[in-house]
Length: 346
Ligand code: DOR
Ligand code: ZN
Image (tube, rainbow, N blue to C red; front, side):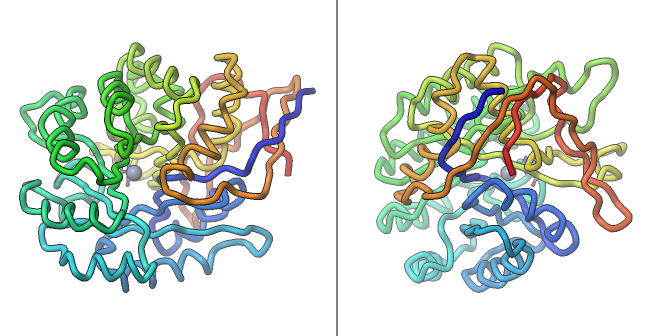
């Protein structure tokens, strides 16, 4: 048996949804994580500081008594976002960051931004006040191949924003390509990226192996093996610009196993054991703590957590629970389809 103790991790990108799903998924995150950045893509979206505070209360109501957990709230940027209100919400501590969804890029992004020029004054304000910008980095132009949308976004939009506003703190969320890893690595010090467990675990074959696999469908879509390898490299080599954002994104199985299935992978439950296994396979366990517990906090100017977690590797592989029950419905729990020998000691 092997045992390691790590600083308790944070998840810099979660979808908690609302109502019955919220109730079911919050404990899956608070069990292992101290803090999380909560995404605002509800219907309707979180548009104001007041929306964020109300949503935060609903989240806090679902945190189990034994867990200490801080949700960090975000605003959903639109072309109508009022920059003075945004500034006030940030400076009063109602929200922690703002999320840029290109309109149509992903789940509940219809109200997002069509023309980046329209929000440049908002981004300037954010740069001035030090408010982090979180970006879903894909173009939405349907003529662009779905596998090229991240790269295209970097070339056409991200580079423009970074050049205009070098002091803006930017997280490119859930990067999936070697181009994104390279652009962030070589970009200015305010530019960082989050990486999900599923993009480290799987390549695009996993969507099609033996038939179509809707539970491996997410956005940005899984890419070729060479891209997965590039992500693995930056995640495991200790570069502080890359950190965990799980993008845990619950949808009912009826909405995933459908003629028009939703994008998103619910990975909160076994995220830490899966990552420990991935890092172990790469002989990179000594870097796991940087990736899951330190690098993100550093970028967001937050203290590192005081609590610790213990990971245990046993000779028996972990048996995954398949589903999370939500009343009469189910959410599929992410299973990367390789053996995992690590678990978090309770
Ligand atoms: O796969 C995804 N699901 N990607 C996203 O960007 C959003 C998320 C969701 O909210 O379902
Ligand atoms: Zn997301």
